[in-house]
Amino acid sequence: MASIVKRGKSYRAQISLYKYGEHKKLTKTFPTKKEAKLWALEMELAKGEGKELAHRTTTFADFFENWIYLVKVNDVKETTFQNYVRTLGVIRNLFQDIQLKDLNDIVVQKKIDEYAKTHSRKTTHEVLLKIKTSLRDAYARGYIANDFARLVKTRGENPPKRNKALSITDFRKLRNYVLQHPEDEFNLLVLLALETGMRRGELLAIRPESLYEYGIKVRHSISPTSDDTSLKTQNAKRDVSINKEVYELIRKIC
Image 1 (cartoon, rainbow, N blue to C red):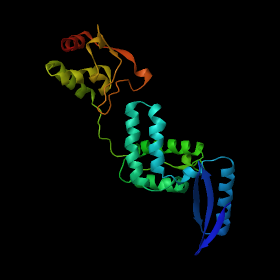
Image 2: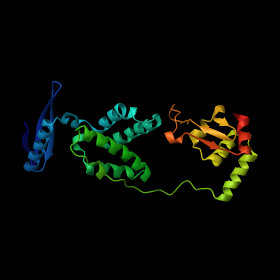
Image 3: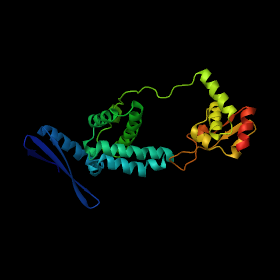
Image 4: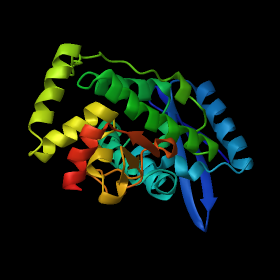
């Protein structure tokens, strides 16, 4: 049964939980007795429906860590998983000891806005996407009472672009330069990037067997943070054509 206790000017609601032979208590404080009773009733109903209320006292950071190592590790590529691991550090720093039961859209929005003050909108958006996915999972498991993830918005500034596209004139200058200095393997990588539009990891993963007459088979990608050599997506597997001049230069080093 739930109990309501007056503490100064506020009211603390408490319900008892029992699972796997262990007793736990779930508490929350409200400014009015009516709000405390309503919350206690909702929790008792949720308990009767089999919701995992005991997990609601878990910190969000601990839940996120368990979630990525038990769930996401089998769902995503190794390089993507490492992004989740890096996000865990961000979440521990932002949310610290905040428990699942204390989360709502306002709490999460404040934390995201705090993060956005020192990070670009794109970076903030990527972190928020991972947070939202984990919150939806927590809601589906009954660890949080409401599915509020959709209410949280990405904010922050878009910094000035650091990368400036080459003009046609500069493109031709660069291409002519690397063609005239093929003794440097880096120049050949630049040449291939200009000719094919291949990603950096795909260029670094070129092997002798990748080369065929006037073309390259794109089958692998090398990442500086992972031993996984699979391509970014299944559709990234492809054959790209190169002209004879470029083919002859690449063949000499393969």
